[in-house]
Image (cartoon, rainbow, N blue to C red; front, side, top):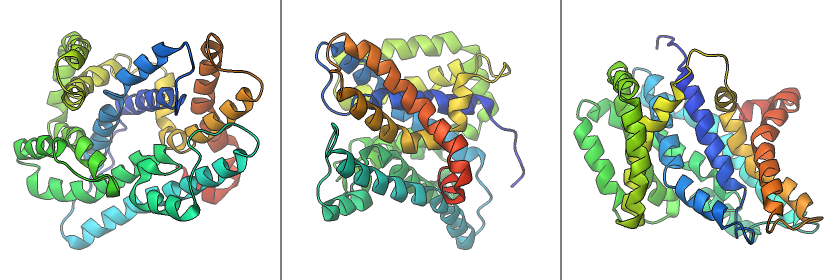
Length: 330
């Protein structure tokens, strides 16, 4: 595979996507009293932030995809991907479980985990129900890396079939075991990311030329929550978010390093550690203050900063001295 230019706009898009993820993780359970605005904000963010994250992941996969000539190449490819993702998923899933049990004795903990056997079952088969439920994205991403090399080899010249399969998958009644429900839910958005790379420059020309139109369509798409089912509105809003948010990240591609690019460079570390550090900060704060009412307006920015910059600090200044942890979070 030839070395390709780094996609700065995609780095920024990853950064913006992980920012939205952390915003949604500030409150894991009940919204603080008197702060219904946050519940509304989270409701709308959850309509598009993971579709956009999956789209970006699909773009990255297709852009860096090597030539697959045979079964050996395929298994080497997925082994490399799983080798990178599995250790972090398992390690931080265990850390979250142990940390919640230990810290629950001295501070408030959201979603206290069950016994070790049920947690192990959930971590391996139903991540969204485990103590580290926020890690489900990594689990589904691993499944995408297993499936999409085959999609690219056999169907990439038939994008309509791929999109049709994604639409059918959206409405299939599947179990949450092996995260099949979310795999089916986000298949189409990952697929769109893979597909646009096949005509990438043409795609970029369109979203750059019609930037304000796609942004306007994205904004108007939120009206669908009043007229269609939650699933259909998420598909519509998620679809229009892809070109709109991507075009927004291209406004200043050639400018000085932005905060979005910084977050983008540490996306995996932030994803693995943000809930841990937010939980610790929240537990300490709630030992001394309530976060109801106006207090939440002061506490929520603190938790957001902890969730974003805490993992960067740990990765950059602590894990660099522990090679195995540095490797797992890279």
